[in-house]
Length: 354
Image 1 (tube, helix red, strand yellow):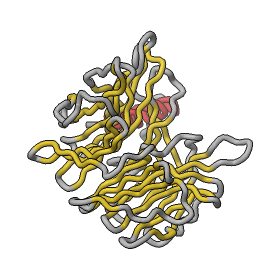
Image 2: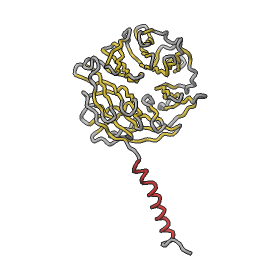
Image 3: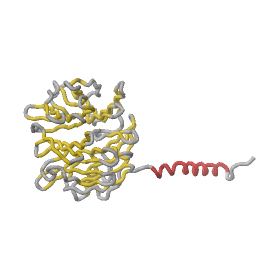
Image 4: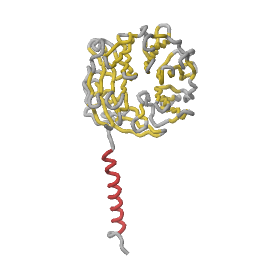
C-alpha cells in the first residue's frame, strides 16, 4: 500500500501549505483604509457633513477659523482627488456650511450666514441662493428632496418649522406637545420624519402632507435618536443611544423591514450613529471613537454584530477623527479632522476600497 512519506508530520505540513495557498490570495487582496490628500484649511477646521452621488462626485462641508471669525469650507471629490470650492456666493464672508444633500441633479447646502439661514443650490448653470423667510436663534436641522426642503429651529417664540416648495416658504404648524425638534429627514415631499423631545421622552413624528402624526415607533426606554436613514428598498434604519442610570449610554439600531421593527444593540458603546451609512457591502458603517491616537477607527455592523477596522497610521497625530462617511460606488469615503502634535485640527479624508 502506498502512503505519504514522512508520516503524520508530512501530512500536517502539506495541509498547512494547502490552506495557505487558499487563504493568502484573499488576505492579500483584503482592502484597507488609505489616506487621501486634502487642501488644508485655516486651522482649527471643523467638518459638518459629507454626501456622495456615485463614484465621481462627493461634497464635504464645514468651516475654518479665520482671524476675524468663522469662514465656510466646501470641498469636492471628483472620483480621483479632493479640491476646495470657493465659487459659491459669499465664499469669503463669515459663516459656516452645514448639511449637504443631492436633490435631483442639484446639490443643496444649508448655510448659516452671520445668523441668517439660507440654502445654496448648485445646478449645471452655477450657484444660486434661497434665503430663509426669517432669522432663527438656532437652526437645528435641514433636509431636502425633490419638491420640498425643510428647516427646523427656534426663535424667541419657540419651535419653528419652515417648508420650501421650490417657489415659496410656508410655516406649517409645529407638532403639538413637542417643544424641541432634534432632527428632520424626508423620504418624499409628503413623507417627512422628525424626532424631538416631549414630556414623555423622545418621539418620532411623520408629516403626511397635511399635519404631523405619531409614527408609532417603539423606541427603547430612555433613548435618544441620532439619525433616521431611508433606503431605496423601503427599509428604514434608526440609530440612537439608550440611557440607563449609573451606566454609560448604549447604542441601538432599529430596522423597519416593511412589516415590523427589529431592535439590535451591537457592541458600539456610546458611539453616535449620526454618521452611519449603508456601505457597498450591504453592512452599516460608521466612525467610532478610536483607542489609538494616531489612527481613526470604523465600525462595520451587520445585525447585532460589529467588527472594527483602523485607518492608516499618521505620524505625530494625537487625534484622528472622521466626522462623516459616504458610499462612493464600490468604496467608502470619510471626511473629518486630524490633529498633529503642536498644531490645531485640520481637514483629512480616508477611503476604503476603490
